Image 1: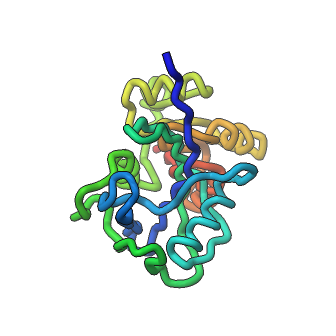
Image 2: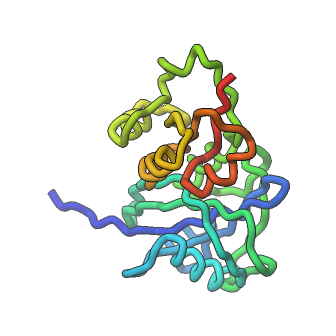
Length: 217
C-alpha cells in the first residue's frame, strides 16, 4: 500500500468587524479552478504557519499581518493532494485585500449566502465559524459533557465522534494556560477554554489557540 505524502498548508481566515470572512476563488490552471476557498498556501521548509501566512497573504492579497491566531488543523484527501490544513484566524491587517493573482474575492458571512462552488475542505471551517466566541455552559452539565477533553487522545476521540467542538480546562493560572496552549496546538476541533473566565479573557484565549471561552453558569 502506497502512503501518500501530506502537504502542509497554512490557511488564513480574515475576519472583518462584522464577522464576514474573506474567500477567494482558485485561478485558472490550478486543481479545482473556480472553487472558492480561504487564502493561503503551502508551508515552505523552515517556515512556521504564521510566517507562511504572512508571505502568502502578501503575495495573494497585498496585505501585511503581524499576528495570526492558531485555530484548527485537519487533513483532507483530495484526488490531486493529501493536505494538512493549518487554519489561523486574523482580525487585523494593513492594506486593503485585492486580487494579485487574477482571482475573484470578497467578504461573506459564514452563515449567509456564500459563493459557489466551495472547496470541500472549506465547509467544516465555515460551519465552525458560526460557533459563538462565548459559550454559556451550565455548571451541572460540565462534568459529564461529551465535548470535555483532558488530553490529546480525548480531543481526537471527540473529533472522531463528530462533536462540534471540544472543552478543556479548568484554566485559572499561568500553568493552566500553558497546558491549554499545548493541547490546542493543531487541535482538530474548535477548542473552548473553561474556568473562572470572562469575556475579558477572550483575546488571550484566542492567542493560545482557543476558539473562545466557555462561561460556566
